[in-house]
Length: 224
Image 1: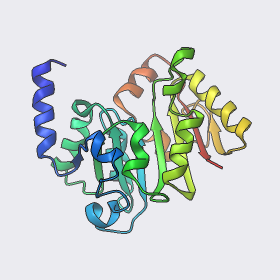
Image 2 (image 1 turned 90 degrees about the vertical axis):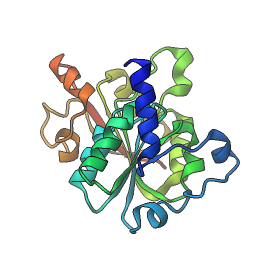
Image 3 (image 1 turned 135 degrees about the vertical axis):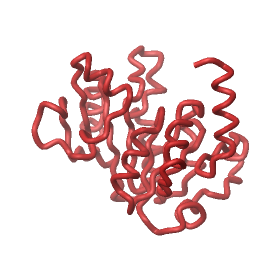
Image 4 (image 1 turned 30 degrees about the vertical axis):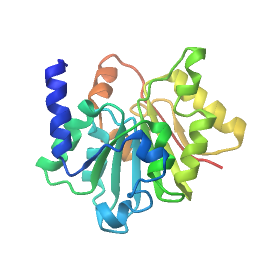
């Protein structure tokens, strides 16, 4: 994407009522007004709150929002020019139960209050295979601690990935730490019984992986 195109998208994001771009300073200093108030101030209902972390173009957040009108969805990504597409689609199609936040995933505990979130989706994260990159792996112990802080006690996390490494790493970590694995499947399109929300929504990149015959894996779990 050219820098001109990116700038155009950044400018457009600023005009979207469903896009939030808090500064790091605002978040870390604890001044963020929507923390603990997402349902009340933005969605204006008491429906469950679901996050998609690393939402890319926002297709999954928008797809889930269309599928579940009685839930609220928030896609989070540091790359605003990417989720511009999802935000614009939501506005064009009057999908009121989805929003997007431009920020780093490690700041989520500054954006959401304890027990504010019902469910988390992590879709096709970078597996960060190199050992030096493990601190950025989105299901590592540090990230799980952050998720636990904002999740309700019964809250669940969903991991959908094309990376067999990420699938195996996460399963091993969950079992080793005594977290509760509710469901695991190492090829959701070939094995029966895959949850419908896992197979009925496909992202741009997922379609590419499927064309390459890469198995898509899925884990649903609770953090203890």
